[in-house]
Amino acid sequence: MKTCPLARFCLLLAATAAAAVAVGACSSPPAEKPSADQEVVGQQVDSAAAPADVSATDAAPAPQDSAGPEVAADVAALPAAVTLIVDATATSDPGLADLVVGKSGALTPDIEVVYPPDNALAPVDFAPITVQWTYAGPADKFVVRFENAEAEINVLGDATNWASAASTGKGYAVTLPKGIWQDLFAFPDHPAWKLRILAVSVSGGQVVGKLLASKPLTFHISPMPAGGAIYYWNTQMMAVRVLEQGQKQPSTVPTPGGMCAGCHSVSPDGSTVAVSHMMGAGMASMSMSLVTAKSGQPPPWLHPKAKQLLASSFTIAAAFSESHFSEKERWLVVPTSGTAGFIPGPTKLMAVDLMGGTATNLVQGGDLGQQAFPAWSKDGSTVVYASSSNVGNGFAATAATALYTVPFNGGQGGKAQLVAGTDDLDVFHYYPTFTLDGNYIVYNRAAATGNPCPASGGSGGPSSGGEGTYDNCHAELWMIAATGGNPIRLDLANESLEPLTNSWPTLGIVPGQYHWMAFSSRRNYGFLHTGSPPSPQIYIAAIEPLKIASGQDPSYAALWLPGQDVTAGCHIARWSSTPRD
Image (cartoon, rainbow, N blue to C red):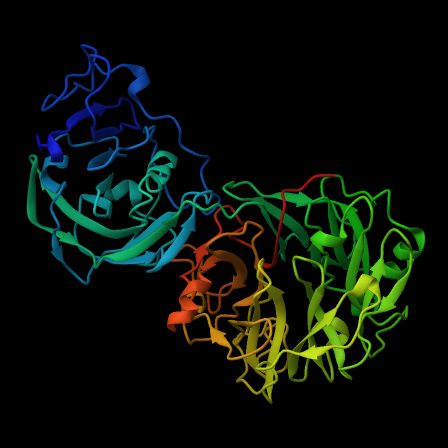
């Protein structure tokens, strides 16, 4: 039996039945004498004699992406210098731990980790991820290993059990057990883990051939929560779906019937959803309704005139404000044509007093263009939006766009101001959003003269190439100081220079060291969601503004949002509080 580092005690527990789980951990000397069933240091519990409560039972519900088994485990918080073994197979080899723990293996390019990406960062309340890798060689067992200066955590599994039918090649996947996932956050002084996959063939308790290892990648964790919930549009259901942070079962927001009930916005308190919908006559019938997030009923405080204005105008993609949404006042900023029955123009931003029933043009000079895609600063003083000679009635701009800010001024608006650095010729700058501190604007950028995009297969909307902002495959994630300046490409969050439709960023609701960003992308999710291109899915990435001063990319690689509808197109993420009425 391997000796634990720092002369700490080791305890090996063997589980029973089909989900046999072996857990080996180093821990401080126990306060109480171990029972006769649990001999310490070098002694192994006979699996046949192990008590029933030793088996692990805290596995989360199976993820909807059919990624393979989620290893069951019930592991206490881990102290420093720990080695943890979890064998998720029914045919666990008691001697395997001695063969692999603490051994690095021979590096091979044949084992490739395809998810998570290198340098991703997860908040503490994120749901456990599904690790995916490919290997075409022979192997009986795999080890998913996380290691840092304090700990080595090994998740052992059987190659047959972890083989994934979703992979066209030799692909394997396992969703980390909830207990193991939580243990990754137990070492705040070492937030960066090295993740690698080890492959081994075993015969008669001995390794046959070499113990092989993939190239390690870095996986970051943060004790900071992202909080709230993600409200996104499901193209297959034509509905707004909600995933609360850390959960894997989305719910549906009840919305008015119609061909399309999307392009939604959510109040900061999670109580109200503004949803645009077509009522049978295509785009010409686009109007907006406000509903309560839980029951789907009209809010009792909504003034009849405000309701009529939103219902009779071509209104889409509105914006709420935390500072102007309370029992005393409720405002909505929305691009609208103000005319019913057909698609008119030009489109202007309106500040709508939802309780008073009045509306005012927000931009009072400084910008002669059409206006769309508004977003509010957290303090409610400023609205940022995109301006163009043609914003497609607030739905999709077809001419180059620039970003402007305008004061709210109690609903009276004021003179608009160009955000310097976002007015490049033949470039779309659109879908802006403020960081929580108001210091930066995160937005989409795409060349207005880009090459046509690949056909989307109808799973997530028509790809527009360089023709407009909607579903533009060349869309990238950028940020800039709210006062203007040099724009910054979020390289890691964008993942690639290839066109991935990294679209419509929205930022989290918890302030701190990181800004959490949700966005949709047509990138591959390992091998569990692929295509040419795949339908869009929601991803989460962190932004660390402190890196900007040293000239570093402030973003981290993005993680797929667990629990979303993997068989559908999911886009237009909105981050807000958990839904309530």
